[in-house]
Every structure is written in structure tokens, then in C-alpha cells.
Image (cartoon, rainbow, N blue to C red; front, side, top):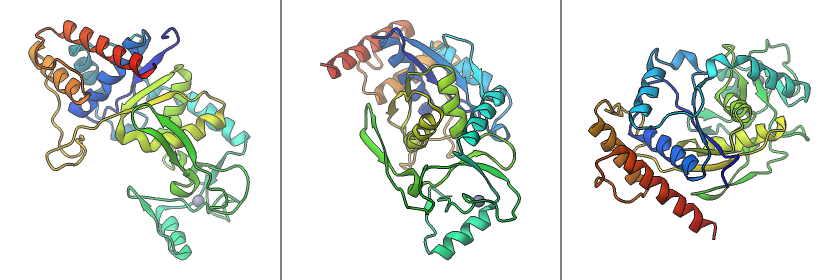
Length: 308
Ligand SMILES: [Zn+2]
């Protein structure tokens, strides 16, 4: 195994690396090393207005301080617009993408009129208003047609099934639970879902290891992969670090940036991440290289026992 393995860690430079993001970084690195594969870093700065200047460089430095260095030069989403546009053009040609002229208010009103103002993580389930045309409105955003036949919303709610390496079988009926999601936003920026799928294919990613908070995106990404004719990688979603209030630790609820400047600080941060991943020997090794090598061996042993 391993000759064709290509994994990645894909941070958004909206702040510095924190304890939660290091868990995903370490897990994806260990998985790649355990398989004898490649580990790549991709800077997910497609949503440029949310990015903080200098944060990406800082994240790369923090990763390097922890001994996690990309096997190839990092890819920056903000420099990849041309390949996202190509993918969008392909979906338009296949009639899997259409222009939408709805504002958020339009969508709220339509859902109210339909009697199901369903909110999902604060996002509205798009009711498919513009599937048959713009009805005189001006096109604002491009949306993905989540089903290929039938014209009525909910007509085809066939769920997308996939298996997570840690969480087991998963399924989501994207058409009813999410709706036709956005590919290119009204402000002209490409949406995260399209960018991730195109990048994973362009970089030949075979294994995606990322935080559990991203699990919910997977079905949408699989639908896009299928529409674009891309292979679907294997997915592993890692446990989240919780804040004191039980909420997911994030940059938004004040997660502290990791201190990795001194070697002892980097090792402490790595130990904490390894502990959350259930790895042994945390806190007993005083050398980063030795600790990482031991965790790779432990990770590989877990893979082998899972395969027998
Ligand atoms: Zn619309």
C-alpha cells in the first residue's frame, strides 16, 4: 500500500493554527506517513475577505515547528480561479449548474410560503426557485443542480451514502437537506465546496483526513465529484477539541493560537493533539522526531489491525 497515497492538510488562513486544527494536521500527516504516501498542504483562502494577511505564512511556520512540512510547494486557492472556472463551465455545459437570482430574503419568503422554513446550521435549504429560469430576475450566483431528473423539489431525495473510516456509514439526502448549493457566489468568489473538490482532484488526493466539523460537507463534495467525473477519495474525520463550554474549539470562540516557537512548546502541542487521537506515550518523549516516528508506527499498526 502507499505508492499512490496522496493526502493533504488544508487550513483556512483566517487566524493562526490552534489546538483543534493541529489535531487534523497531525492526523493527516501520520496517515500519509503510515501509508508511505505524500502529504501536501493547501492554503484554503478562496474566501479572501475572511482571510487575515500573513496568517497562511504563520500557519506554515507553526506546522514546520511541529515537524510537519508539505512534500510539495503549498497550493493557494486564491491562485486557482482558472481551474474552478473550468469546472463550473463543465457543469454549466452538462446542465448541472444554473444561475440563481434570489437574495436571502427571497429564499426566506419562498420557504415561508411553502410552509417549511427549514434552517440548517443557520443556512437556508434552497427551495430550487431558479431551476427553471430566472423569471426576469438578474442572475447573482451559480448553483449546483443536486438531482438530474424530475423538476419538483423533493421529487428525488435519494441519499448519498459514504463510509467514514472512523465514523462508519454516513448518508445525506443533499437535495432535501441542503438544496442546490452555491458554486460561485454573487460577489464573484468561488464557493468552498467547488474549490475543495477541484483542488482534491487536481492534486490527485486519495485520502482526506480532516476535522469532524467538516463531515457534513462530504455528501455535497461527492455529488460534485460524480458530476465532474472525479474519483472520490477515502474520508477520515478526526475528533474535535472542545472548548470549556463544550462547544467546538474554533477561532470564533477564542481558541488560543498555538505556541510553537520553542521546541518544548511545539512538543507539548503535538502531545496534546496525539492524546486526542488516542495515541500512546504522550508526554514521555522529549524529542519531536522520536515522538513523531513512534506515532507513525502506532498509526500504521492500527491500520494493519483494521485491515485484518
Ligand atoms: Zn434562485
